[in-house]
Amino acid sequence: MNFILEALEDEKVTCVGLSSNGRKGWQKPKKSSNGNHIFVWLMNLNRRFLHDISFSLALFFFLLFRVKSNDCILVYNFTSRVALPIILLKSLKKFNLIIELEEVYSKIADYKRLGMFESHGFKLADGFILASRTMISLIGEKPFVISAGYYERELEETPSDKIIERDLAEPFLLYSGRIDGFGGVFDLIREFRSSSLEVPLVITGSGDRMAKIKQLVKNDERIQYLGNITRSKLLSLVLKNCICINPMNPMLDYAEFSFPSKIIWWLAQGKIVLSTPCPSVINSDVRNYIRFFSWSSCENPRFTTFVQAVQESIGMLASQECNSGKTSEELLALLKKQQREMHDLIAKRMCGFSR
Image (tube, rainbow, N blue to C red; front, side, top):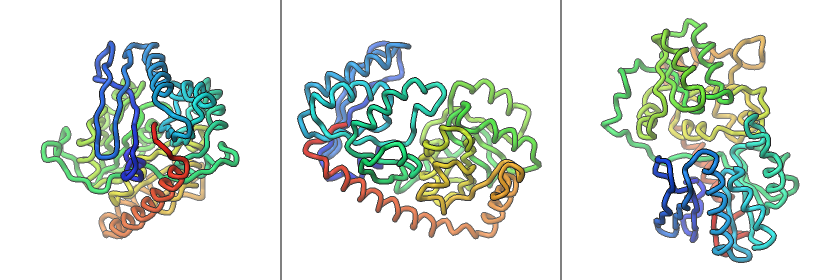
């Protein structure tokens, strides 16, 4: 969302989100501001089964009383709890709707039931911000811009976060993301454990299979699982001499339309990024900055194997051939261009602005 707000820094924007303090029970509404941007955190009930319902109701009444005809609403992450009130009010309030898509939730097994909300919302939308060109087939003839996603301009290491758990040998491999059946982390662990690679593998993230991952890595001293760490600690890792890996299974429906925006964050810091040939990534505007691999030469002979890609990347780091500074400059120029296009798309639809 910060990437979008930077594109709209001179516009008056109201950002609406979910109030949360990490505890169960009622979450009180909050409000803050930063320049032209006002942040409103809606009250909700943090209880299983009631969490999404309470947020949908709060959002419905917020939009009902606050949004005017021809206002522009930008939805970041079109989940069912957001989609339902938007769909119900679109024809009544006659607002302009722009949907930002990084993930298509109906392509995830656990969320396939949401397909009806997504497809109906896509039909109602007046424009789209897409993370990958593979998503164009989902939106018909609607106007769109491509936005590679979130990045940070400057990163500074926090001294207190320099040591994560134990000292890390450098370079090391880094996976940060979902610990589930979609992110590909278990494929990564399997291939890494069967290899003779001597570089450490560092894994961060959370999900419904955290217990399984702890069991898998405990007998391999090369692998360190840090759990779900803070952003500042993750930043501390990224600023070290690491090779970042996106191991998502390219054969999943999810991989066709869901672009891992963390890739942009890594690339913007000049990191070497290794990725499986997911359709959403290999068809993205940043594909030329990424080194693609397959788990084995039999799986996809077009690409080097995982072990070969790691060894070549280590060699590039040792010989300083990766030219990370030039890559970062080129990428940031591309991202700036995408931000301008995003602003132009939204400005055409704007009178007021709400999310």
